[in-house]
Image 1 (cartoon, rainbow, N blue to C red):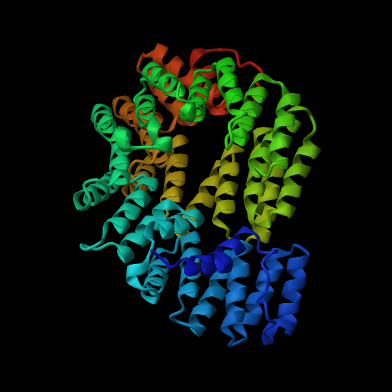
Image 2 (image 1 turned 180 degrees about the vertical axis):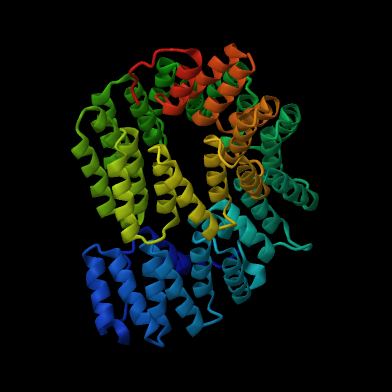
Length: 561
């Protein structure tokens, strides 16, 4: 295990800074560079909330200095400010000054991962690995650190070459298995979990992961049989394994029976109520769901989650006043952007758009580390109202503050497509994908956009299959492949792919696509059932509603969002 002092130093020097760069203090004792003009400009900019200007001024100072501590400060500020290009220049300077420094290499790894520069990330991670004692790593803790700051497929492709070999111990193998699982590479995750079990036959974490993977692969009976053998050794949330597997196998009544049985144990009541409430919501039974979430309100550690669920139920019912109160309580309790987004959504429905936008703007000011997420949330709310002009203007303005940030570039392309500006959307995605050819998310986004609009289907298929080689069981990418089959008229090929994607995600838009394929194949009853389930999970989803209205010939009704 990595020494605790190292973890604390990394958290203080890197991870806490990521949480709020404006609160990150300069070194305790004032270094010689602290009063240089560029550093003074940088600190003043940070105090004014001008993150980009502060990061750029710090990096300018670092590039002109031979002081590694200044380069360290510049790199950390730039990362915390989400100035990825500037961060890369700063961290390269830091590494040039101290080539074997482990913390510089770690930050370089994180920045390269955020930019999806996999070869650079692998090189930096190798330096970090070699700078530490090989026997003192905590691989799962380190894997969690990487995954918390970057996309799982990138982490998998960087972690494995550095950490994995024929002699890897069970801790490394299990960490790699979990990364592969989060990257939707289930077969690889299963192979690694089985290697762990071979080394340590009683390793319950590896067995549990293996069982969940088999369920997601559709091997429900085998997963349930193994779970029943393992269950006596499990505790905590894993006690609900059988119920979870039954739910994933679409055996809802059996899952409910199991949860009601477990709920009789006072120690398990909260976990059972969470699942029963979620099941009721999926079935469209708001009254039953509300009952279970109300039960949770008095359970320690569950109040915030229950309040959020009750706010969403009130919003579904059109009880905007009650929903707003609940979201405001969550915001005051520190839940953050999700609560603000819910409150903003309700305010928009109440014709208070300026108040809604002000909520999100205030959150971004107070939480500069979440500014990009806040901008994307605001843009999505505006787009849901049909105001693509303002949404795009917001994203374009954000791109000026955060140049070339991949999240914002992707959001811009998405908004262009939703606004019907297809050629611009395709060009934007094409530019992003060519800049990051190894990124399966971008390959899939471009492939799906082409397929959805029945354009360049051969290229669409190449892109989608390229994405699947990296993340073969990702429901979003499976959905793209199924939809491509549909566009080619291959309904029999489309249905099983979409069914798998729907079973493992319950994403409303995937439900819309599966329902359309079922309808076109003559299974109208099941199509309506899938659409109903999709709308229970995501009331007002415009793709589901439009698909259902178009195929059934229904007169589109005015529906709440």
